[in-house]
Length: 272
Length: 277
Figure (cartoon, rainbow over the protein chains, first blue to last red):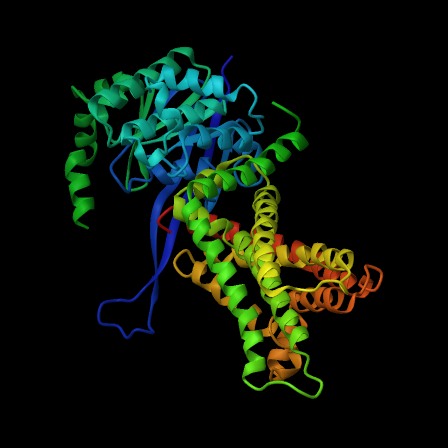
């Protein structure tokens, strides 16, 4: 029987910043508000991979951070396995882990030291951890000898794999993956995607995958949400979305919905 | 998996162990800081020695006592300021390393997080201060024959309570201001050095600074330890000082956590936890 892993009702998030208008005196600063996420309603059933697609600034990371208890919504309610992300944050954190685009590690420490630290934070003792760490790293195709090298000496792809291994070590029920393959070389990207495919097949973990790689989303996700400007533009399986819009690819679906390509959106973001 | 209390203990130890790993990797820095601590204490000791040759003598002036007074101040300030800054840098460390979001997402109570950092700071501070003390004793032939070590240790232990409270209050600063919070921690440390009677009695200060010294827990910690080390005050004699220090701890630790909780909520509302700030 399926049950919701994520329930979001009317969640909105805006960021306010005090800024000086061009030409205004230095003391006159006005509040500027940028809405990162408009009122969002969403239910994600447990198991499988749900993709959140959109360009930079579309609200993907804001959504991930809200579910990870790192941001509080301005309005509305977000629940993870029935626990409120604001009032039951500790319960939510016991069930969630996150792999972000920037592998958050103590760079001078080794993968082993970082992982034993993570293991302790999630209430495990170090007994048996080394064996599990080696097993997980092997599963991800990392050579054994990297385990005791400082993280800063590892390649970007290797660091990202350690980040994924670290998340597996804590056995989360919900895995939030924020652009996990961005910046990886093609081989590492394929290896990470293979791990995601395994997770999808086993359906023991619910994965929320943020990406702007439409091919990746198409290959890995059971369901896809397209976000732009903090609003959901489309929701469905990759096949449904393509059929609904008479498009060959998800990139074409996005173009049909926004009139822009994802690359153009990102280029625009980079300029502004 | 172990029970809730066990998992918090595991996390508490995890924070202390992580700090140990970090310090092992930055061991060259630690050697430099140890050298700096030794040099600072020795400078103060030689300053006291130099007072005699500068003509400060006669009357009631006791050069040996003045030297001991200053050395005790330097050693204790070295220890207490180290514990204070280590704890106060709990958040700054995470910002430097880019791990703040990972740590704040862990299923750990904030009290466990901060106490884990404090635990490491206390043990590490003791180890470093012990080495500095050994060097100081060897060079200045310090006479502790009149000292009551037990009395001094009781005061030292009691002083950790308000110090941890104050450090938690200070650790909030990088949460409030990702860009300037770190520097503000230094300002707080410097102000405590000024007003807490580390190298001089409070009476030499202008009255507003004396008032600030009156509410600084370090003032009582230093005065109490000097009484034990210079005048032989016993643990029983130190009961009033210990009472003041623990009383300050009872106020400052919950206040520190309350302020930290408020600052964490604010950071999550404003999106200040992000790595770049």
